[in-house]
Amino acid sequence: MSIQSHASSFQTSSDGFTLSRSFSGSQHYTHNPSCSLTETSFDFEQSVGSRPLFQGVTWQVQPLDDTHKNQEPPPIQMSLSNGNVSEGSYKLPIGLERQLSSNNKKPSGSQSVGSHETGSEHHKDRKRLMREAIGSLSQTTEMVEPLLAMVVSDPVHIVSRILSEMTTSSLTNLKESARDVILNPSKRRQFSTFRKSLEKRSDITLEILSKAHTTQIEILVALKTGIQDFLQSNSDMSSSDLAEIFLNIRCRNLTCRSYIPVDECDCKICVQKKGFCSACMCLVCSKFDMASNTCSWVGCDVCLHWCHTDCGIRESYIRNGRSANRAPGQSQTEMQFHCVACDHPSEMFGFVREVFQNFAKGWTAETLSNELEYVRRIFSASEDIRGKRLHEISLQMLTRLSDKANVHQVRTFVMGFLTDDDSLKSESIQIPQEVVKPGYGERERAMVHLKPVPVIPREPVFDELDGIVRIKLAEAQMFQMRADDARREAEGLNRIAQAKSKKIDEEFASRVAKLHFSEAEEIRRQKFEELQALENAHQEYFNMKLRMEREIKDLLLKMEATKRNFTSSS
Image 1: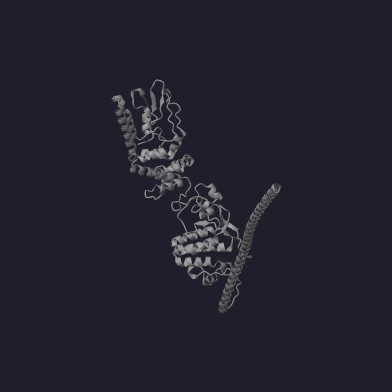
Image 2 (image 1 turned 90 degrees about the vertical axis):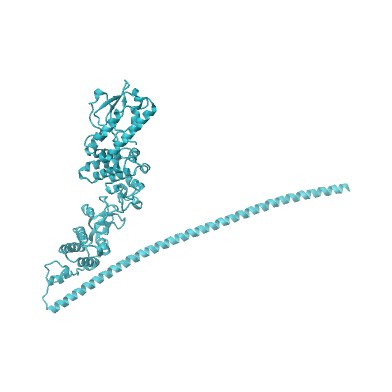
């Protein structure tokens, strides 16, 4: 088994003796290397590793007369002591220190026999004793936290080699210690120290983590993210996924695990915040939870990033803003969520309406009460009439729920208010008798939220007719406003359709022009090739004509010469 040495580094003086300091830094002993032919103190270092238990701790060996000088602990010792890693002491547990000291007191094989074989056996005995000493981890709580600090700070391959030879119970104790550091409020400073140390480590890469021990990766990821679920024994997370989570390549949410940034988003939040997942994390606090289909989260209509309602209200990202869809004569402000990532304002009334329409049917009284509380908080500072009414109704319904009112009636009334929000603009909604706040009389119950009119004493029949007329007028106004909204929406869709049609025509014309141009270019190329072929043929014909003329001249000359020869001979 390989383990980092609990002894310090060695320094050989001129008299041939090696001075060493014990792990606790309180004892000295001398060793004459000439007494051993096959095994020196360096061999012992190699058998158990030559590094101290904590990375960065250099055990300076000084002459005996300088032993008590410069007693200031190294920075890592101070930080770990402040983090309650070892309560300010680097001493090993008593049982383990005794095993190590008894191991050092055993005579070497070379001293007793002087043979190489005996020395090798003694070397193996030392390694076996070290394994047994580390195996006592499952019973020694004093050793757990120093080993946990070693997992955080020491090179990955060294710690992996140590953990690979530990028993299952020891690994379980180590994971339980890491879980205790995360969950125990009294160990917040220690947890913060570990986390900062992991954030500063630049030597850990995906390739290195792929070769690490599974328990080691689980502890590293759990301490870095602060999520103790990574230490569960029944976790189905693979080592590659854990490594990607540690390096902020994958989302740390166990139910999400998306690659980040999601959809290669390049907004300022996804770029600046390491490990931020826009699919499940809050834009403000970067935390996530298991809530869904709720008003406790608000989202952006454009970039689809999300934010806790509490965070949005606290940081004033949920506030009044200018409405772009209000008709003339209506309030020009509304409650909006101003996205932290893209600064786009998203309307809150429509968001709440969508949540209630899609998910309110399955809510219990407690869930409905929680959702109404979020609605009340969202619209508590609303300046428009619709938002104020929704805030008032949320208060009334919360009161009714606290009085054990019928959940179905409360839900139906809220749904009716959200669905018929256009009728609210004419201020003609009536609250049913079952959910009206106690204290209203029959007259107020029938007239609440109606448009105020001068009170004129009339006969009861005329009062009823007047009420019917007002209701019909309100309905007419409601339908007229809906018709106006539908007409405006149709005009907007018509404009969009015309713009898209124009764009399609332009694109079609450009593509046709490009197609014609390419066709013309192809025809020109073909004609040019034909012209070149004709020129080549003409050139060949001209050359052949010249050659034939020369040959004819030669034949004529030969015939003339033959004729003269024939004449002269006759």
